Image (cartoon, rainbow, N blue to C red):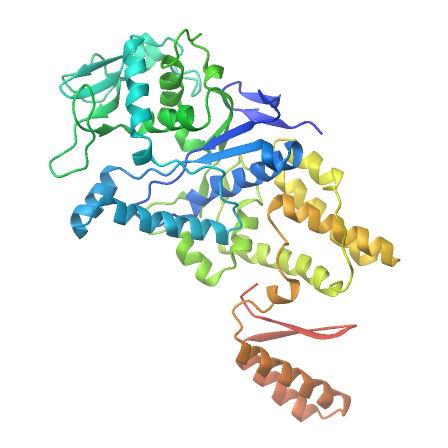
Length: 466
């Protein structure tokens, strides 16, 4: 099946053809590790995790290389390290570990590569030198700046005219800049900040050059897919293209010599507002997963098309809990049905290959669950369950134990207590001892347990946990 994706640079949905099907490459901008990630940061992680899974399904697991960087030197990192009196690595290692653990709770696979800025400083310096040697950057007062006027295709990704940007500039121009739009490739470090030696003076890199250099050093050029949030299109990704193209010797000034396809996910909205500290509506993944299963958050992030805005509301979380309850409920009902290895169902693959149409995939999952519920033979149930689990796997869903899903957070003692009450409840109802049955009902309610009666007997879950 052929994958089609919406390419931000081409501004249309196009057929994806990797440069080398034996080595499909993807890069997604990762975190700056000075604090916890918020749920908006998690949307590209989950979206491109689905794409990673899909590419592995299409081309084979060993043929897809996915890199997501870690920015481990930055003004905010330096500030946090100075305040705590520690090396920046203490801050960055701490929050990188938390980030990876939190994203794993959302079901995200670890990328193939996780390059760090501080581990790629030689590559960054070499790329800056190449850009300068090719006449696209200049040194001034300890800084190295990219000369945007030297790259006439600047603005193509964000659909902005370079002439208009220069004419309409309203920023205060540093005296060492040739024009207002020139951006920093290298800058001097402040006193007591980390610095690295470079031909034009000790300091550290600007943000944009870090990704360009890590891509070239770790994946090689051109890469197949470059992804990230919509907010990175300008200036970050625009600057990446300029740097990545102009560092190449004999370059064609063609953006595709850097990244062949560009994909960007939409924003999360919070009650029709953007998330911000000033509004007090920042939702940290590290906090959300304490009360909400990671799989619920993952599915909620996939409930809208990745390029569309997503309104993050309590209603969305509640609806997503109910959807997963239904799917896991079906799997629990047919827990004894064996499964076999199958391909991902055609309807699911068709939806994913249509620019990651995850809302359509969710509809397909419901149809697969219904097929399992209505199958009339053991062979039919086996195939239906196998297809449902295969479809879930490519989405990073439904891979947990169905029984455990409904008892998330329940201790062994609580589980034993509930199971004993259910046995007593069954006996009381069989004896039509309604006062005793009412007492047991109240005891279960006090434990925050919801009981579901079915043909195979009573099952239960913790209220508000799944």
